[in-house]
Image 1 (tube, each protein chain N blue to C red):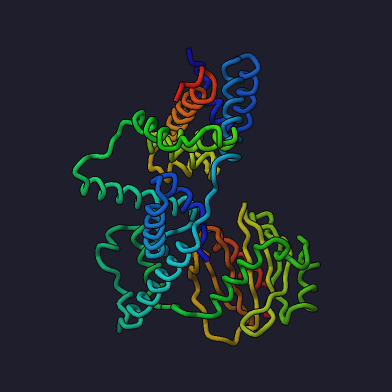
Image 2 (cartoon, one colour):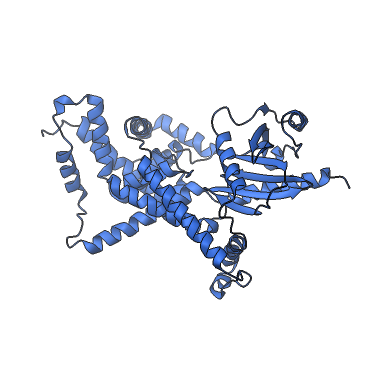
Length: 170
Length: 261
Protein backbone atom coordinates (compact mmCIF):
# COMPACT_ATOMS: atom_id res chain seq x y z
CA UNK A 1 0.00 0.00 0.00
CA UNK A 2 1.79 3.12 -1.14
CA UNK A 3 -0.19 6.33 -0.84
CA UNK A 4 -0.11 8.83 -3.71
CA UNK A 5 2.08 6.60 -5.86
CA UNK A 6 0.09 7.36 -9.00
CA UNK A 7 0.23 11.11 -8.39
CA UNK A 8 3.97 10.91 -7.74
CA UNK A 9 4.45 8.90 -10.91
CA UNK A 10 2.37 11.28 -13.04
CA UNK A 11 4.28 14.25 -11.69
CA UNK A 12 7.61 12.55 -12.37
CA UNK A 13 6.48 11.70 -15.89
CA UNK A 14 5.70 15.34 -16.61
CA UNK A 15 8.95 16.45 -15.06
CA UNK A 16 11.28 14.19 -16.95
CA UNK A 17 9.49 13.25 -20.16
CA UNK A 18 10.80 9.68 -20.20
CA UNK A 19 9.08 6.85 -18.38
CA UNK A 20 12.22 4.96 -17.33
CA UNK A 21 13.67 8.10 -15.73
CA UNK A 22 10.32 8.59 -14.01
CA UNK A 23 10.53 5.06 -12.54
CA UNK A 24 13.97 5.76 -11.09
CA UNK A 25 12.96 9.10 -9.67
CA UNK A 26 9.79 7.79 -8.04
CA UNK A 27 11.67 4.88 -6.51
CA UNK A 28 14.34 7.18 -5.11
CA UNK A 29 11.68 9.58 -3.84
CA UNK A 30 9.73 6.89 -1.99
CA UNK A 31 12.90 5.59 -0.41
CA UNK A 32 13.79 9.07 0.81
CA UNK A 33 10.22 9.65 1.96
CA UNK A 34 10.22 6.35 3.80
CA UNK A 35 13.41 7.23 5.64
CA UNK A 36 12.18 10.71 6.50
CA UNK A 37 8.60 9.81 7.32
CA UNK A 38 9.02 10.25 11.04
CA UNK A 39 10.10 13.84 10.53
CA UNK A 40 6.78 14.65 8.86
CA UNK A 41 4.57 16.28 11.46
CA UNK A 42 1.08 17.04 10.32
CA UNK A 43 0.82 18.77 6.97
CA UNK A 44 -0.21 17.31 3.68
CA UNK A 45 1.42 14.01 2.75
CA UNK A 46 0.78 14.39 -0.97
CA UNK A 47 2.42 17.82 -1.22
CA UNK A 48 5.31 16.59 0.93
CA UNK A 49 5.82 13.56 -1.28
CA UNK A 50 5.65 15.54 -4.53
CA UNK A 51 8.23 17.94 -3.09
CA UNK A 52 10.56 14.99 -2.63
CA UNK A 53 9.86 13.80 -6.16
CA UNK A 54 10.76 17.24 -7.44
CA UNK A 55 13.97 17.34 -5.40
CA UNK A 56 14.97 13.90 -6.67
CA UNK A 57 14.36 15.05 -10.21
CA UNK A 58 16.48 18.16 -9.65
CA UNK A 59 19.31 16.05 -8.24
CA UNK A 60 19.12 13.66 -11.18
CA UNK A 61 19.22 16.59 -13.61
CA UNK A 62 22.32 18.00 -11.94
CA UNK A 63 24.09 14.66 -12.11
CA UNK A 64 23.12 14.25 -15.74
CA UNK A 65 24.42 17.69 -16.59
CA UNK A 66 27.68 17.05 -14.79
CA UNK A 67 28.17 13.86 -16.77
CA UNK A 68 27.21 15.31 -20.11
CA UNK A 69 29.95 16.98 -22.10
CA UNK A 70 27.43 18.95 -24.09
CA UNK A 71 24.97 20.95 -21.99
CA UNK A 72 21.29 20.17 -22.53
CA UNK A 73 19.61 22.56 -24.92
CA UNK A 74 17.65 25.24 -23.14
CA UNK A 75 16.08 26.52 -26.32
CA UNK A 76 12.47 25.54 -25.95
CA UNK A 77 11.47 26.71 -29.37
CA UNK A 78 13.99 24.27 -30.80
CA UNK A 79 12.56 21.51 -28.61
CA UNK A 80 9.12 22.41 -29.82
CA UNK A 81 10.18 22.07 -33.41
CA UNK A 82 12.09 18.84 -33.00
CA UNK A 83 9.38 17.32 -30.80
CA UNK A 84 6.91 18.28 -33.51
CA UNK A 85 8.98 16.59 -36.16
CA UNK A 86 9.31 13.41 -34.07
CA UNK A 87 5.68 13.13 -33.23
CA UNK A 88 4.04 13.69 -36.55
CA UNK A 89 3.11 10.42 -38.23
CA UNK A 90 0.93 10.48 -41.31
CA UNK A 91 -1.75 13.01 -40.33
CA UNK A 92 -4.36 11.25 -42.42
CA UNK A 93 -4.13 8.15 -40.21
CA UNK A 94 -4.94 10.08 -37.07
CA UNK A 95 -8.37 11.15 -35.94
CA UNK A 96 -8.75 14.82 -35.13
CA UNK A 97 -9.14 14.05 -31.41
CA UNK A 98 -6.06 11.86 -31.38
CA UNK A 99 -4.04 14.50 -33.15
CA UNK A 100 -5.21 17.19 -30.74
CA UNK A 101 -4.30 14.99 -27.81
CA UNK A 102 -0.80 14.52 -29.14
CA UNK A 103 -0.47 18.20 -29.92
CA UNK A 104 -1.55 19.20 -26.43
CA UNK A 105 0.85 16.78 -24.76
CA UNK A 106 3.69 17.91 -26.97
CA UNK A 107 3.05 21.61 -26.36
CA UNK A 108 2.98 21.07 -22.59
CA UNK A 109 6.13 18.96 -22.69
CA UNK A 110 7.85 21.80 -24.52
CA UNK A 111 7.05 24.38 -21.84
CA UNK A 112 9.95 25.30 -19.53
CA UNK A 113 9.95 23.15 -16.42
CA UNK A 114 9.01 25.94 -14.02
CA UNK A 115 5.89 26.59 -16.06
CA UNK A 116 5.09 22.96 -16.78
CA UNK A 117 5.16 21.88 -13.15
CA UNK A 118 2.82 24.57 -11.80
CA UNK A 119 0.42 24.00 -14.70
CA UNK A 120 0.28 20.22 -14.23
CA UNK A 121 -0.03 20.40 -10.45
CA UNK A 122 -2.91 22.85 -10.81
CA UNK A 123 -4.82 21.35 -13.72
CA UNK A 124 -4.16 17.63 -13.34
CA UNK A 125 -3.57 17.15 -9.61
CA UNK A 126 -5.99 19.90 -8.56
CA UNK A 127 -3.59 21.28 -5.98
CA UNK A 128 -4.03 24.64 -4.28
CA UNK A 129 -1.66 27.56 -4.82
CA UNK A 130 -0.30 27.00 -1.32
CA UNK A 131 0.45 23.34 -1.99
CA UNK A 132 2.08 24.18 -5.31
CA UNK A 133 4.19 26.83 -3.57
CA UNK A 134 5.36 24.18 -1.10
CA UNK A 135 6.26 21.73 -3.84
CA UNK A 136 7.95 24.20 -6.18
CA UNK A 137 9.56 25.97 -3.21
CA UNK A 138 8.58 29.45 -4.36
CA UNK A 139 6.26 32.10 -2.87
CA UNK A 140 2.56 31.98 -3.71
CA UNK A 141 2.86 35.15 -5.79
CA UNK A 142 5.41 33.40 -7.97
CA UNK A 143 3.07 30.44 -8.38
CA UNK A 144 0.36 32.81 -9.60
CA UNK A 145 2.56 34.58 -12.10
CA UNK A 146 4.15 31.37 -13.36
CA UNK A 147 0.74 29.81 -13.78
CA UNK A 148 -0.47 32.84 -15.71
CA UNK A 149 2.57 32.75 -17.96
CA UNK A 150 2.31 28.99 -18.48
CA UNK A 151 -1.34 29.31 -19.45
CA UNK A 152 -0.70 32.24 -21.75
CA UNK A 153 2.17 30.42 -23.45
CA UNK A 154 0.15 27.26 -23.87
CA UNK A 155 -2.77 29.25 -25.22
CA UNK A 156 -0.50 30.98 -27.74
CA UNK A 157 1.07 27.74 -28.96
CA UNK A 158 -2.29 26.01 -29.03
CA UNK A 159 -3.94 28.69 -31.16
CA UNK A 160 -0.99 28.69 -33.51
CA UNK A 161 -1.23 24.92 -33.93
CA UNK A 162 -4.95 24.46 -34.18
CA UNK A 163 -6.27 27.30 -36.17
CA UNK A 164 -6.14 30.66 -34.41
CA UNK A 165 -3.89 31.44 -37.36
CA UNK A 166 -3.55 29.30 -40.50
CA UNK A 167 -1.82 26.04 -39.77
CA UNK A 168 1.82 25.90 -40.84
CA UNK A 169 2.60 23.51 -43.67
CA UNK A 170 4.59 20.59 -42.36
CA UNK B 1 -3.23 45.85 -23.61
CA UNK B 2 -3.74 43.44 -20.75
CA UNK B 3 -6.45 44.00 -18.18
CA UNK B 4 -5.07 44.62 -14.69
CA UNK B 5 -7.48 42.05 -13.25
CA UNK B 6 -6.01 39.11 -15.17
CA UNK B 7 -4.27 37.54 -12.16
CA UNK B 8 -7.33 37.95 -9.97
CA UNK B 9 -9.54 36.40 -12.63
CA UNK B 10 -7.18 33.45 -12.76
CA UNK B 11 -7.21 33.10 -8.96
CA UNK B 12 -11.01 33.25 -9.10
CA UNK B 13 -11.06 30.50 -11.69
CA UNK B 14 -8.80 28.38 -9.48
CA UNK B 15 -11.09 28.84 -6.48
CA UNK B 16 -8.44 30.77 -4.58
CA UNK B 17 -10.40 33.92 -3.71
CA UNK B 18 -12.89 34.62 -0.94
CA UNK B 19 -16.57 35.23 -1.56
CA UNK B 20 -16.28 39.03 -1.63
CA UNK B 21 -13.48 39.00 -4.19
CA UNK B 22 -15.36 36.39 -6.21
CA UNK B 23 -18.31 38.74 -6.41
CA UNK B 24 -16.04 41.58 -7.54
CA UNK B 25 -14.46 39.43 -10.23
CA UNK B 26 -17.86 38.29 -11.47
CA UNK B 27 -19.06 41.90 -11.67
CA UNK B 28 -15.87 42.93 -13.42
CA UNK B 29 -16.16 40.15 -15.98
CA UNK B 30 -19.65 41.34 -16.90
CA UNK B 31 -18.11 44.51 -18.28
CA UNK B 32 -14.68 43.35 -19.38
CA UNK B 33 -14.71 41.31 -22.58
CA UNK B 34 -11.05 40.42 -22.18
CA UNK B 35 -11.58 38.80 -18.78
CA UNK B 36 -14.72 37.03 -19.98
CA UNK B 37 -12.79 35.49 -22.81
CA UNK B 38 -9.94 34.62 -20.43
CA UNK B 39 -12.37 32.75 -18.19
CA UNK B 40 -13.79 30.87 -21.16
CA UNK B 41 -10.34 29.99 -22.35
CA UNK B 42 -9.20 28.80 -18.89
CA UNK B 43 -12.24 26.55 -18.59
CA UNK B 44 -11.79 25.24 -22.12
CA UNK B 45 -8.11 24.44 -21.64
CA UNK B 46 -8.66 22.72 -18.31
CA UNK B 47 -11.46 20.60 -19.72
CA UNK B 48 -9.32 19.74 -22.72
CA UNK B 49 -6.33 18.78 -20.61
CA UNK B 50 -8.35 16.62 -18.24
CA UNK B 51 -10.15 14.99 -21.12
CA UNK B 52 -7.30 14.44 -23.50
CA UNK B 53 -4.11 14.05 -21.52
CA UNK B 54 -3.18 10.72 -20.08
CA UNK B 55 -3.55 10.01 -16.39
CA UNK B 56 -0.91 7.31 -16.29
CA UNK B 57 -0.83 5.05 -13.22
CA UNK B 58 2.40 3.78 -11.81
CA UNK B 59 3.36 0.68 -13.82
CA UNK B 60 3.06 -2.65 -11.95
CA UNK B 61 6.78 -3.36 -12.16
CA UNK B 62 7.52 -0.03 -10.43
CA UNK B 63 5.01 -0.88 -7.72
CA UNK B 64 6.57 -4.31 -7.24
CA UNK B 65 10.13 -3.03 -7.13
CA UNK B 66 9.13 -0.31 -4.66
CA UNK B 67 7.51 -2.88 -2.39
CA UNK B 68 10.72 -4.89 -2.52
CA UNK B 69 12.99 -1.92 -1.84
CA UNK B 70 10.87 -0.64 1.04
CA UNK B 71 10.59 -4.11 2.60
CA UNK B 72 14.35 -4.41 2.48
CA UNK B 73 14.61 -0.94 4.01
CA UNK B 74 12.26 -1.91 6.84
CA UNK B 75 14.26 -5.03 7.59
CA UNK B 76 17.54 -3.11 7.65
CA UNK B 77 16.09 -0.43 9.91
CA UNK B 78 14.67 -3.03 12.28
CA UNK B 79 17.96 -4.96 12.39
CA UNK B 80 19.92 -1.82 13.13
CA UNK B 81 17.53 -0.82 15.85
CA UNK B 82 17.41 -4.17 17.60
CA UNK B 83 21.18 -4.51 17.34
CA UNK B 84 21.65 -1.28 19.24
CA UNK B 85 22.08 -2.02 22.94
CA UNK B 86 21.58 -0.29 25.21
CA UNK B 87 19.33 2.18 23.37
CA UNK B 88 20.90 5.59 23.37
CA UNK B 89 17.75 7.52 22.66
CA UNK B 90 17.66 9.22 26.03
CA UNK B 91 20.41 11.64 25.08
CA UNK B 92 19.72 13.04 21.63
CA UNK B 93 22.87 14.23 19.86
CA UNK B 94 23.81 17.84 20.46
CA UNK B 95 23.11 18.87 16.89
CA UNK B 96 19.54 17.73 17.34
CA UNK B 97 18.95 19.70 20.51
CA UNK B 98 20.67 22.65 18.87
CA UNK B 99 17.90 22.71 16.32
CA UNK B 100 15.53 23.80 19.06
CA UNK B 101 11.84 23.10 18.72
CA UNK B 102 12.04 21.30 15.39
CA UNK B 103 14.98 19.31 16.64
CA UNK B 104 13.17 18.40 19.80
CA UNK B 105 10.19 17.20 17.83
CA UNK B 106 12.44 15.19 15.57
CA UNK B 107 14.32 13.80 18.54
CA UNK B 108 11.02 12.86 20.13
CA UNK B 109 9.90 10.96 17.08
CA UNK B 110 13.29 9.34 16.74
CA UNK B 111 13.20 8.34 20.38
CA UNK B 112 9.74 6.91 19.91
CA UNK B 113 10.95 4.98 16.93
CA UNK B 114 14.17 3.80 18.56
CA UNK B 115 12.58 2.64 21.75
CA UNK B 116 9.91 0.75 19.88
CA UNK B 117 11.13 -0.99 16.75
CA UNK B 118 7.76 -2.31 15.58
CA UNK B 119 9.28 -3.90 12.55
CA UNK B 120 6.76 -6.65 12.03
CA UNK B 121 3.59 -6.23 14.01
CA UNK B 122 0.72 -8.20 12.48
CA UNK B 123 -1.86 -6.20 14.39
CA UNK B 124 -0.62 -2.93 12.89
CA UNK B 125 -0.61 -4.48 9.42
CA UNK B 126 -4.14 -5.73 9.99
CA UNK B 127 -5.15 -2.24 11.10
CA UNK B 128 -3.83 -0.65 7.94
CA UNK B 129 -5.54 -3.28 5.79
CA UNK B 130 -8.82 -2.79 7.62
CA UNK B 131 -8.54 0.97 7.20
CA UNK B 132 -7.78 0.70 3.49
CA UNK B 133 -10.57 -1.83 3.02
CA UNK B 134 -12.99 0.55 4.69
CA UNK B 135 -12.17 3.22 2.12
CA UNK B 136 -13.46 1.03 -0.72
CA UNK B 137 -16.94 2.00 -1.90
CA UNK B 138 -19.75 0.66 0.29
CA UNK B 139 -17.39 -0.62 2.96
CA UNK B 140 -17.14 2.33 5.25
CA UNK B 141 -20.08 1.98 7.59
CA UNK B 142 -22.67 -0.66 8.40
CA UNK B 143 -24.73 1.67 10.51
CA UNK B 144 -24.84 5.24 9.31
CA UNK B 145 -25.64 7.68 12.01
CA UNK B 146 -24.36 10.81 13.61
CA UNK B 147 -26.17 9.88 16.81
CA UNK B 148 -24.09 8.05 19.41
CA UNK B 149 -27.25 6.52 20.85
CA UNK B 150 -27.79 4.74 17.55
CA UNK B 151 -24.22 3.69 16.91
CA UNK B 152 -23.23 2.50 20.35
CA UNK B 153 -26.08 0.01 20.93
CA UNK B 154 -25.62 -1.29 17.40
CA UNK B 155 -22.17 -2.54 18.33
CA UNK B 156 -23.62 -4.60 21.17
CA UNK B 157 -25.26 -6.85 18.62
CA UNK B 158 -22.51 -6.88 16.00
CA UNK B 159 -19.14 -6.66 17.67
CA UNK B 160 -17.84 -8.11 20.90
CA UNK B 161 -17.20 -4.72 22.38
CA UNK B 162 -18.98 -1.50 23.16
CA UNK B 163 -16.51 1.29 22.56
CA UNK B 164 -16.68 4.98 23.31
CA UNK B 165 -18.85 6.66 20.68
CA UNK B 166 -19.33 10.41 20.71
CA UNK B 167 -19.99 12.92 17.98
CA UNK B 168 -17.37 15.67 18.04
CA UNK B 169 -18.82 17.67 15.15
CA UNK B 170 -18.32 20.90 17.09
CA UNK B 171 -14.62 20.17 17.38
CA UNK B 172 -14.39 19.26 13.69
CA UNK B 173 -14.73 15.48 13.95
CA UNK B 174 -18.06 14.38 12.58
CA UNK B 175 -19.33 10.94 13.57
CA UNK B 176 -20.26 9.10 10.36
CA UNK B 177 -21.24 5.75 11.80
CA UNK B 178 -19.92 2.38 12.81
CA UNK B 179 -18.88 -0.89 11.33
CA UNK B 180 -18.06 -4.36 12.59
CA UNK B 181 -14.71 -5.58 11.37
CA UNK B 182 -12.69 -8.71 11.93
CA UNK B 183 -8.99 -9.04 12.47
CA UNK B 184 -6.50 -10.56 14.85
CA UNK B 185 -8.94 -13.47 15.29
CA UNK B 186 -11.69 -11.42 16.81
CA UNK B 187 -14.52 -9.12 16.05
CA UNK B 188 -13.60 -5.50 16.23
CA UNK B 189 -15.68 -2.35 16.41
CA UNK B 190 -14.80 0.46 14.05
CA UNK B 191 -16.17 3.95 14.61
CA UNK B 192 -15.77 6.25 11.63
CA UNK B 193 -15.16 9.98 11.89
CA UNK B 194 -14.70 12.58 9.22
CA UNK B 195 -12.30 15.46 9.65
CA UNK B 196 -12.22 17.84 6.70
CA UNK B 197 -11.66 15.62 3.66
CA UNK B 198 -10.09 12.86 5.76
CA UNK B 199 -11.64 9.75 7.23
CA UNK B 200 -10.51 8.42 10.56
CA UNK B 201 -11.23 4.87 11.64
CA UNK B 202 -11.16 4.25 15.36
CA UNK B 203 -10.88 0.52 16.04
CA UNK B 204 -11.63 -0.98 19.42
CA UNK B 205 -11.26 -4.53 20.64
CA UNK B 206 -10.60 -6.48 23.79
CA UNK B 207 -6.88 -5.95 24.04
CA UNK B 208 -5.13 -9.02 25.32
CA UNK B 209 -2.44 -9.19 22.66
CA UNK B 210 1.03 -7.65 22.59
CA UNK B 211 1.21 -4.00 23.47
CA UNK B 212 1.14 -1.52 20.59
CA UNK B 213 3.20 1.61 20.06
CA UNK B 214 1.53 4.81 21.18
CA UNK B 215 2.21 6.47 17.86
CA UNK B 216 3.45 4.96 14.67
CA UNK B 217 3.18 5.32 10.93
CA UNK B 218 2.49 2.48 8.55
CA UNK B 219 2.32 2.71 4.76
CA UNK B 220 1.82 6.43 5.09
CA UNK B 221 -1.03 6.18 7.61
CA UNK B 222 -0.60 7.60 11.05
CA UNK B 223 -1.74 5.33 13.85
CA UNK B 224 -2.37 6.28 17.46
CA UNK B 225 -3.04 3.57 20.03
CA UNK B 226 -4.21 3.72 23.61
CA UNK B 227 -5.85 1.49 26.18
CA UNK B 228 -8.91 2.30 28.18
CA UNK B 229 -10.23 -0.23 30.66
CA UNK B 230 -9.89 -3.59 28.96
CA UNK B 231 -10.27 -2.13 25.49
CA UNK B 232 -7.49 -1.45 23.05
CA UNK B 233 -8.17 1.58 20.84
CA UNK B 234 -6.39 2.46 17.62
CA UNK B 235 -7.12 5.51 15.49
CA UNK B 236 -5.80 5.47 11.95
CA UNK B 237 -5.99 7.99 9.14
CA UNK B 238 -4.13 9.72 6.35
CA UNK B 239 -4.73 13.00 8.11
CA UNK B 240 -1.85 14.84 9.81
CA UNK B 241 -0.57 14.02 13.27
CA UNK B 242 -2.05 17.09 14.89
CA UNK B 243 -5.51 16.30 13.54
CA UNK B 244 -5.31 12.67 14.58
CA UNK B 245 -4.12 13.55 18.05
CA UNK B 246 -6.95 16.06 18.36
CA UNK B 247 -9.45 13.23 18.02
CA UNK B 248 -7.59 10.81 20.28
CA UNK B 249 -7.47 13.45 23.02
CA UNK B 250 -11.24 13.96 22.75
CA UNK B 251 -11.92 10.22 22.76
CA UNK B 252 -9.68 9.56 25.74
CA UNK B 253 -11.34 12.36 27.68
CA UNK B 254 -14.79 11.06 26.77
CA UNK B 255 -13.74 7.53 27.71
CA UNK B 256 -12.37 8.60 31.06
CA UNK B 257 -15.75 10.17 31.86
CA UNK B 258 -17.52 6.94 30.98
CA UNK B 259 -15.40 4.81 33.22
CA UNK B 260 -16.82 3.80 36.61
CA UNK B 261 -15.25 5.81 39.39
